[in-house]
Image 1 (cartoon, protein in one colour):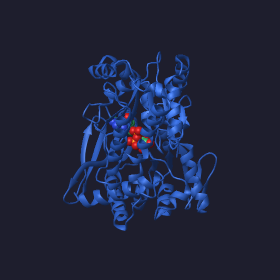
Image 2 (image 1 turned 120 degrees about the vertical axis):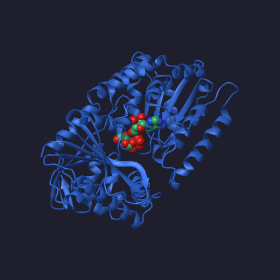
Image 3 (image 1 turned 90 degrees about the horizontal axis):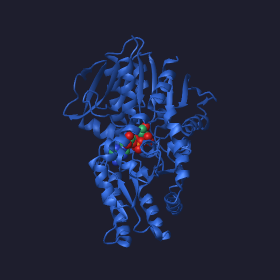
Image 4 (image 1 turned 90 degrees about the vertical axis):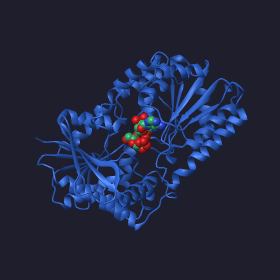
Length: 456
Ligand code: ADQ
């Protein structure tokens, strides 16, 4: 029987019973549970020597295949190339990009090891769905092992404009690896256009209006598959959480004031410092909101081993402290900066309790927090989403207030407008947003990708 074989850097908890994290995990688990299949990825463990064999575990119809990494592999493949070279470059931060040959070699070597592990159990008819920038060369490695199965790839990050990609050493190889898949999925049309633009500028190939690509003597489909959320589940979860102790405590602490919320991984792409400055602008230019509203930013640290990430927290704390110092009163704080994480259920309740969702990345593949915030609102009294035009989600979420995160003064003024928006307009905007999220949820997303992958 034809199976779906998913490959990603990390595997979501399959058998643990807890709620899976985020769109990828929900979509992939749903697909695997429906048809049966395999999920292969890094176990999260670092070991002394390269292990001979991957570990197999079975949960009903799903087989999980885990590989450990050595310290050298972790340093070169994961930290060095994936997160030190590709992540900044794909997020338009060539100034933060670092490149070294050993890192590139480590990246290639781990992709080769993943391909060999797959080679051990792939069967005729299997469809392989590879996720994200950690595993771009996997198709090339699988083809080198004479595997002729249908191979699909989905990029969760943005695909940068040609001029930016040209700054990444060995950029041509990266694009050739992508063109080796049968289906290359991106978050938005803008990303597909970036990929097509590179092929044209470098005179390597073309992509037609139906997404049929031709390059390096191969043909493939390049198309947008915007990732989404488990809309119905989140609606229920947020409503269930309304009376929870956490939400009650949060509301009690607000003492009738309005709350604006931001939830992100602590990452330079998320525009957190400019966001805080937008909040400062709100209190500076619209003094009627002083003492009336607070901003809560939840941003647990990630990738702390990389120096590019070390300064962000310090910078954020400095700005929050400065603004609190300037505007706080004995019974009111303008900014609550929280660096711990909360469960998805608790966040759903917090979103519902917030009058504004502030999602202002400088660039983001999609940004699921934006979609989650919308789904968690009370339709009778919904909050307002203020969303960066550079989040992939802005291409879809027409009912949001779309802002340019670099113009933090305008963002601050937009916040003032959002806080005064009539109930009628809030409901209207929420309905437009929910219509989209009900039609295009995570199930629709993964089915669209699976259909393209099956269509060989
Ligand atoms: P991320 O950069 O991690 O993901 P995002 O889409 O915002 O960005 O979040 C992914 C998931 O993590 C969401 O379900 C969100 O709720 C959760 N999350 C984010 N911050 C959190 C926090 N502070 N605490 C708890 N949970 C948190 C990458 C790309 C995105 C793309 C996703 C999915 O960078 O652009 O939307 O993959 O494709």
